[in-house]
Image 1: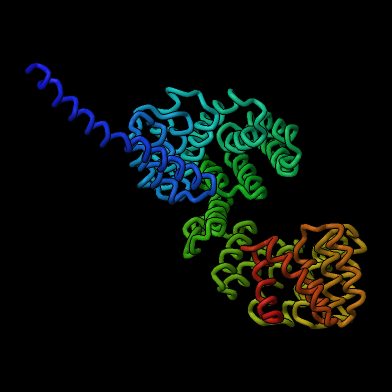
Image 2 (image 1 turned 60 degrees about the vertical axis):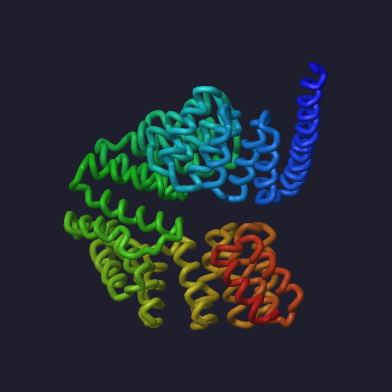
Length: 472
């Protein structure tokens, strides 16, 4: 009878093996589907397939990580975080993707904690780069500096990291900023124009005896290179160093407005408190008046804008910039006669500066007034002063177009677009010239180029409007 006791368990084991055998096989089926979907960038399907494979192949913990990565790539942060939770030991990439998922979910605090945990296992430049981004979301300059210094410890010739660190140090430790900025430019020439602007500002600020004004100078330079998010703490530091510095308050207000513009946040009253504070501290400051004029312009309150420029012009009557500002204010108010007078006054104050002749020419072309008497001579004067200035050349082409001189307009604008291909205003005016001449194929080609080059910018939007108007 002993043989019968053995036979029953063997049968049960055979049945159990027959039942379980397909499970790993199905796991590999799901895995193949997951890999194919991932390669095809169908991350939604890949996330589900990897999760199925992970359940059937429990010894493959990397599959949960791949499921998490797929969910991160498709933007499902909640699912990604849940998938990563099944992994006992994340890879370096896993720590990066988990922290990134928290960033994408808006939880920068947990992202920072995650990246720091990952750095305990992996001394990774990629993790440090993401840590810097997370600190950036919190406007934590010290955290960004520490992260960038560690990143550069691992990748000492990362030009972008040197440039970013130089920008941060322009606020935190200006005397150390130039070393990193110059090295960034030596590694990658594309940083050189911005670095030269910052270099001039840092050299100037180092000669200024007032610490608050030094930081205003640095903040303005950051604004010039389109780093308004960093300009804000620079001006805040200037204010903290001297709460009576009216210009620092005014520039802080301007920086907050600019940052709203960059991030597509509604303007509302951004910067108003700071600008009001500035004018209370120094109502005769032309800088304060000029920045307040810009604020009112963005609010589309043109009488207030005109009043600010009028005061600036009264306090500094020989400065052509305030006359040009007045011209813009009058134009936006619909007073073309006063606008023309103001623009002409600006050219009288600065007869050897092409900028003001260009503004006068553009005014005439834009409003189709005094093209022969004022606009064309102004454009020709601007080009004579600055023959290689794209705005001046474009203004000349625009005046030719507005006055019906289509052959001259085409020739001038073709020259501008060939010499300065990034100057899209000239491309747009060339497209309009083609339309005026009835050359619709060339016009369409040019408009499509503008729209594809600047899809979300003002030139791209205008090109799109003309495409709808003439080609749909």
